[in-house]
Image 1 (spheres, rainbow, N blue to C red):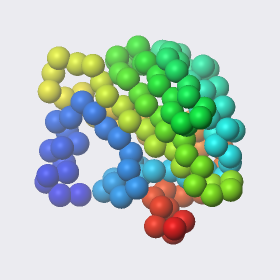
Image 2 (cartoon, rainbow, N blue to C red; image 1 turned 45 degrees about the horizontal axis):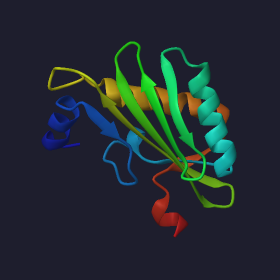
Image 3 (cartoon, helix red, strand yellow; image 1 turned 180 degrees about the horizontal axis):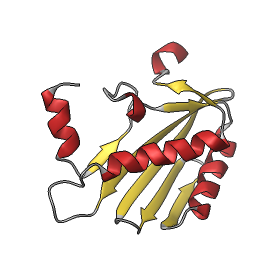
Image 4 (cartoon, rainbow, N blue to C red; image 1 turned 60 degrees about the horizontal axis):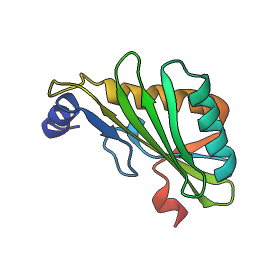
Length: 134
C-alpha cells in the first residue's frame, strides 16, 4: 500500500469492495452457496444486528439496501451475485453521513465486521477470485 492509498483510506467517507482492491480485506468475497440462500443469510444477519434497518431487498437483482443508525449513520449497499453454481460473490459499499471530510476508517471497519459475521453463516471460498472463475 503506497502513500496515495494511505491518504485515500484516511480521508474518505465511502468504502467499497472490489475484485482487485489493494487491501486484501476489501476484496470481493466468494461463498459456496446459491444466490437466494446468500441473500436470505444477509437479510437475516441484518435483522439480527442492532442498529441496522433493512430498507429494501431486491431478490431479482441481488441488491440489499441497509440504513445503519448506530454507532454512526451510514448507508450500506450489499450486492449478491451467483457467478457459478454454488459460487456466489458478495460486494459491500458503505457511505457514512458526516459533516467532516473523513469517517476515520469507520466505513472500512463496518465492511470488515460484516464480512466476519457473514463468514460464520456461509462457507467462505476466497477473495478476488473473478479471474479464476472466467
